[in-house]
Image 1: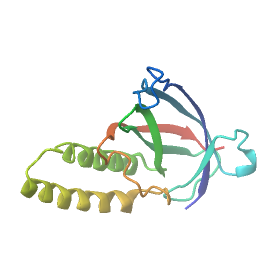
Image 2: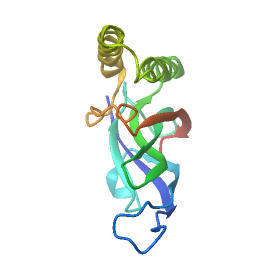
Image 3: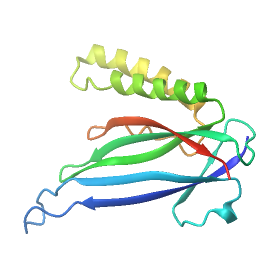
Image 4: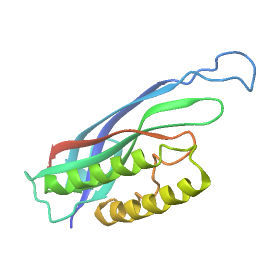
Length: 167
């Protein structure tokens, strides 16, 4: 396993209040994100926007790394944001990255039915718990413990696999 340092671009716009009322709604915030580099040495990560993530096996300079990023929406009573992101895995094997992506998408699809009967919700929660255990077995990011697509205002937008070269 290798500790990788992922550099990325991040910007966001929106979020302005829709009126002068202090309890008013706000326009949606849109987040732009793009990973730019995967470094083997933190000292080479020039950007102040970088995050550490473990790989599933030893990575050397020039190796291809498949970076799994969850994109999700979030919000609260007064506003909503789209394009949020979290790092879930870094793999040398594309099949492991694809497996993680599919598990996350299955879980997100499963929990969409927020208005099911109590009996159905218990079944959904049990199934989701099993999927989440499988997800955590595959995830290589030690901080990826919050299922960002779970929650009343949250939804999974996409699971991206970025093909990067370690430097």
